[in-house]
Image (cartoon, rainbow, N blue to C red; front, side, top):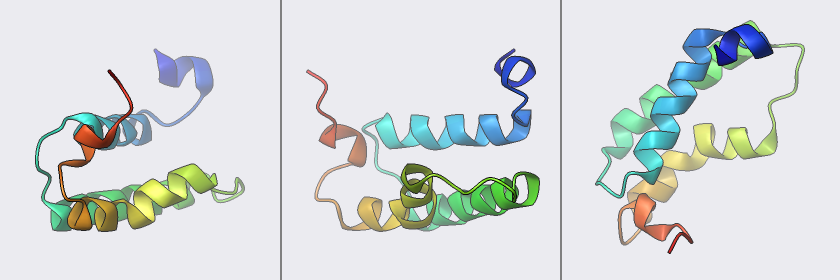
Length: 83
């Protein structure tokens, strides 16, 4: 439904959902697999929407998120500010 309303590709939305769910889960994440999945998602974004500049927040997650996951002392989901 979100894809129909916004016009954003449904596959791209699903991949963003998986990434955000993994990052907020509090579970340990395999940083190598995350990196591969995130970079494939970035390539899909560029392929579909090359006329739109990738927002910095999305770039940080897709291109550098695996480094944060790799070097964080605790699972990344436990670093949130939620009570």
